[in-house]
View (cartoon, helix red, strand yellow):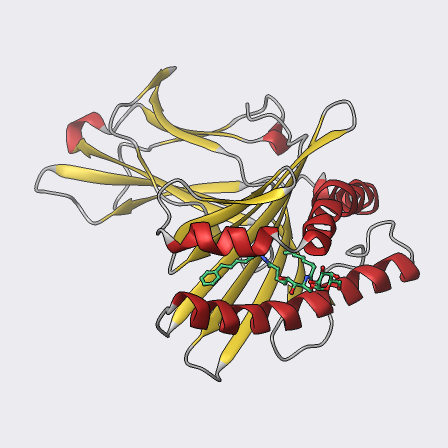
Length: 283
Ligand code: 7LP
């Protein structure tokens, strides 16, 4: 059965739109694993907490300092882009996406990254102590990195954020959010039939809902044997921060008897849910 999640990755996502020379907005989201902890909308001066434990183990003062760094960054970023657009003769509208991440590894180590995309394509990343163009980036990204690399102060701040601040924040979050992060909620499951794919055939649907965390394994089986042709849907969010999944199987009507749907999830331990298809059911 799926292992309970033991490592968590932190993700910061920035979305900046520049419609023309004067209209712009920047929104930022922060995630720990599948939980969103932060929102920073363009209209807001401060980063918003979405969980009571979003501050982790940071003191008010530590958080104030981080907040201030981010405020200066957002203002400077917008100014910088306007300047780069002039320098590089780029055209509006433009979309810039920044993603940064931090994964805690065993033995108290961590791995961090920061990369930027322009019009949906990678342009550069931060490696070690400098800005590096992405492999297939347009030629001007060389020029951009050269310019960015002249700002020693910013490089030091980025390095400090990636290698000191985020890992420390994430460690504190894992501590303060432990019970919510390790929460286990059992799924319920039920069967239905979908629209027949063609005459003489049945579409069997196995619904699995209300589980947490997200990893789950749902299969149609005959005895112990997994049925080929099982169609996995996408795992979809319920409104109560649990998940929903449906898995379908198309079979000849005569072959439906003896099939069952098997659900494996960390919350169930070894007690898989098994639902038998009733060959006599009225669909
Ligand atoms: C914090 C430092 O995004 C994501 C976290 C980044 C944190 C950077 C910072 O705010 C700006 C201000 O620097 C000035 O003051 C500092 C002290 O406050 C230092 O003294 C520094 O030496 C001094 O220069 C600085 O303006 C910085 O450039 C802001 C933006 C940094 C940044 N760069 C990477 C992403 C760029 C992606 C561009 C992609 C692009 C660009 C153009 C067209 C298409 C695509 N520093």
